[in-house]
View: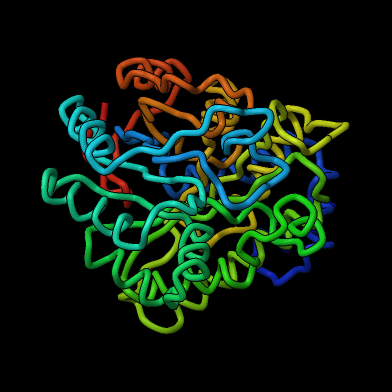
Length: 361
């Protein structure tokens, strides 16, 4: 296994099956290797931002087995927000210091195409300096299918109407059989990648996620990472002005209030190994985010010793992960996040949405 690690660190091309053997290494060896990479890049810096999550609706045309957010028998509380309601939340959050609005919704069959674009346009009109991170590739694919508008046109309209970057949601796991079972009918893996590639071709940045800890195998996880690595390397070979992936975010599956029956759950060690392996394998994606909303803040801080360099942000209101049992519903105050990062022995760095440093504490 040590030889596989040495090959991976040297940049040698290895298969998903070969790389999955890294899980057999002890956690300290993996952690040391991943931490050496993150320290070479960022020393003791830990990044976060001041952001607000807005989820306009939970009425969804798709039924994903892992989802506890969408309205269904286990969540019989459907809602959909108007543009005015969204604008009120956005303005209030900006007054509280939010610099980013993270707008992700369900695949609502009632919203029109103009509704989406008007949301972005009205927010930018009211808050020209706010960064809008909006619409997952899954949402873009849904809009394409619902309205018969090519995803390229959808993405161009998003950019014209004020969307600055895209979140990484909807990737789930790329493995076809697993994807067919947990989110049948949702965007296919190759289309998810195509949508992000085109967004990058417009000079825009996005994130990439992976939902893990359910029924996927370790090989599935590594195959997912390698597909992202390939997509990222393609853009750099073509034109340095193209956008790309800012960060990779391993999202830990949340078990409550959904229809995906999972018998075993990853241990803390397996979670940390997954983050460390991501840092080792994804050498061309700048940042690895330990998303505190799925990991819990304590484990997310430990993950900063295992290759991660980012925690996400203050969030303010979190609805998707908390619906499945995560303790993230009310976000976390900025001063508390700074305190916890310092207490863990790191240097808190407030960033903007594309990782420009705003303040060092």
